Amino acid sequence: MRRVTASVYMTLDGRGAFPKYPGSDRSSSEVSALFRHMWYDRFDDVTTVIMGRRSFLGHQRTWSEKALRSGEPKWLLEYRRYLDRVEKICLSHRLKSTDWENSRILRGDLSRIIAKLKREKGGNIILEGGPAVVRECLRRNLADDYWFFVMPVVYGKGPRYWGPMKDQCTLKLIETKPGEDQEILLHYEVVR
Figure 1 (cartoon, rainbow, N blue to C red):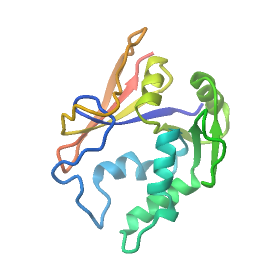
Figure 2 (tube, rainbow, N blue to C red):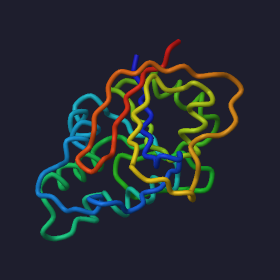
Figure 3 (cartoon, rainbow, N blue to C red):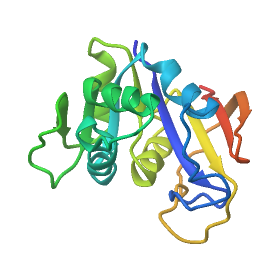
């Protein structure tokens, strides 16, 4: 059965934001080790990416090949091409259509949507949905593992990942990887 990985990009205080910090806006001709590990190393086994509406529209505007800017490094083009060809699921009650290739819009209960996707043919699934979608995934224990990309900032504003939960979710640490700009990647597997 397909595995679901929830990707969480957060500040130290659990905010779903992308603040500036030393090195965060450095351009590079090479992909960083953390980005390579989180995405490139999984191009072959992840065939579906789930996003909330805002995340989906933001990714389409920023990361599709149509958003390519001249002079960008080759690694960015490879990532853009991956996002264009992978199946993208947009979770939305508002969005009616999309022109981003290989995309579909799904509505309804998140548990049912993920259960249906896990039964479909294909590789693994990344839930890249933003704080509200990840929070719901955690609350309902829908992911098999979590990748926390923690930025070295206490931000104090922006959407929160954490909220009230009915039950505890216990995680087992699989790996930690430091980033070149003081970020850290924490990979946890769900204990069931």
